[in-house]
Amino acid sequence: MNSWYLKKECEMLIKELRDLYGPIFIVTHGKTVIGQPDPWHSEQGKEKILKIQDYLPANSINNVITGLGQRHIEIAGFLGLKINFFNHLLGDGTKLDDSDHRYIYLTSGAKVRREQLGRVGMREGLIALFKSLSPNTLVCTGRPVIHYLGQEAYSTSLYLMEKGQLIKKVSFGDSWTE
Image 1 (tube, one colour):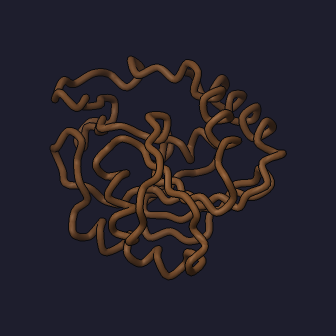
Image 2: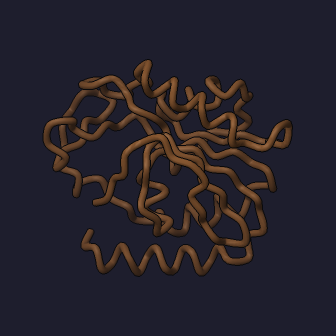
């Protein structure tokens, strides 16, 4: 997908989400073990996720929704929160090739080119998903969702979405852009 098209998709998504009241808290996963399909957090990744807990409002998270990847699911566990919902739009078990970012490993271990992973329907799906969330929901995801929301994406970060605006609150990881 070319960057012009992605930028237009991001602009349309944010426009659609402007009536979202919020607040919605979004946490991106941390550093994972290298060379694993559906990887889990490294010790360093876990330590940094634990730091995010200090920035979440105490006792006000009503729901937790997570992607399907092991690293997404672990976020809630590290933060001591119970998962209420899972959604594939928030991430899955695929893993970017650590040595060549033009490729992605599927959960089966198969290696495919990044452009083979389509984003058809992402905008519509994310609009429906975010509009369905109640205030004070925590979303556990990865950097691609943040990037798709039109922001520079960082690992191990806490974002706040309120009134359709996405604001990065704190980051302990690295940036990633396509």
